[in-house]
Length: 294
View 1 (cartoon, rainbow, N blue to C red):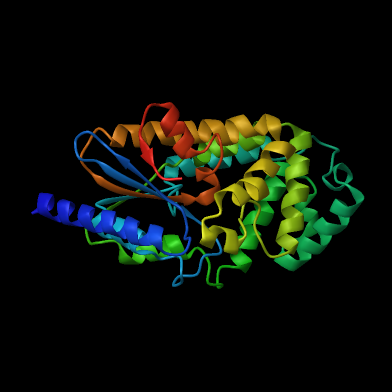
View 2: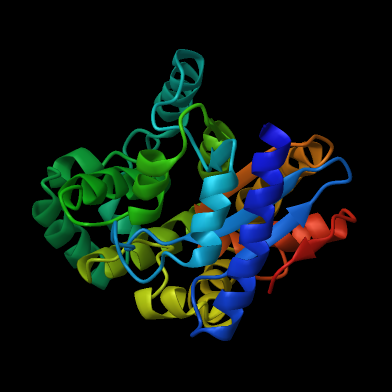
């Protein structure tokens, strides 16, 4: 029964790709096949995707319908051990040395902006002052997420969780500890540059690595690379390797392992992880894994 279901879904997926290719541009999608029947679909999401909208294509629906395993970037709730490790990093490395405060590290514009943004997001400005720039940035990120939680956002992830078939395994790459360690170890000047960039975007109502919705919906990967990926590499060249290259290497390692089985897998991660020379598809191809797609 499972074999028949997989064959039928695979046929529908192939047809859906043909239809999607003939239609208007849509969010990009990649596909990986394994020698023993593994079928892995990579779909790049956008945080400002609505729950229902034009982003849902026949190819995406077919990939979700056939999936018996779904992977996200990180779990909804980290386990107790992970939580403990995260708190350890924050408590040991999240504060500036005694006698230092955050505001003098920022540009005059940044100093004014952090006060405005803190008030807008409901964070006491004094709470941010003893923080390292990376921890202040994350604190504002959490506050931004809380302020936008009632908006129709993160629709891809919400749709998948609501419509995945019964019995589908929900997994996560769970590199959150690695990510936090990379942030904490990044050079201070790059932390400051990233904080200033992030604050400017959040004042516009968008998050740091959030692509333009129209670009994402059209599958305009070159523009997303220019507008999202390239600026991060330019403003934080020393952090780029640990935070982007190593992160994607870990994910590629996991996906390559999955190609050795026979599972039907849907991978949903932010589209910026799937764009550029150090993206997840690029990492897989460098490891000798054949990837269909842009």
